[in-house]
Length: 310
Image (tube, rainbow, N blue to C red; front, side, top):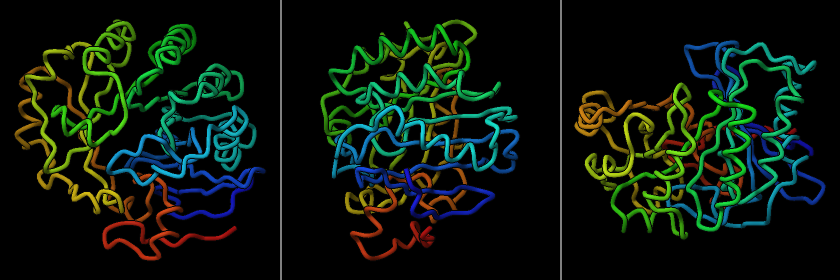
């Protein structure tokens, strides 16, 4: 793997663009969460696929799918970022999160499971906490069965499971995530098996847009607040979100009616708004390079950091 470009800001987030021997390219990201220092929380976000075959309507990583990354290609992304800061692979970080959430749906790549199995042997990292972010495509049952075994055997309470839901409007959800996928009952059934008392609750993620409805009572039919929590993020200003007229909810705060309704229903609610400057870096918006090159222009509210060729 050769890192060919990067963009970002040292004290917030850096996006790396890498090329493999096959000439295929991916992105991966490292970030911190101000005001927390890197020693308190360090997040690595890696790609699982070359491109993505899901094509969510607000994600710039979709399209141009060219296959799965090998185990070594997955590890190379992590290793690059780790060795830049901790060459001896001893990582004294309280919360060292490795998130499979950049380019590609992780459950479509079984090599992700091999990486999860080997991570504790490769790095001396007491704070290691892997995270899988998924839309749970149909046909991935075997992946999730094996993931459950790995979590129970290796990670227990140091694993974050996240399902991307985005809306309770089933027609909108079908449009937003245009593949066959688990319905709410299937996600709930798996979550009930996955969660054990004392472990982290399973996250239901909603990228909240003005025209995407979230019905608290509908969530309560399937997802117990004792086992599931709600994470709300703004829809990031990507090229695809703009073209599909998906604009972020403007009143995303603790006083938001949805947030209050969810709290009253018993859900823990995480408002993950982040730093606005991350939109300019492109650290949370999907694939930076393809859109930047294809569009030949910058969006007003995002992707304004210039790539530095290496």
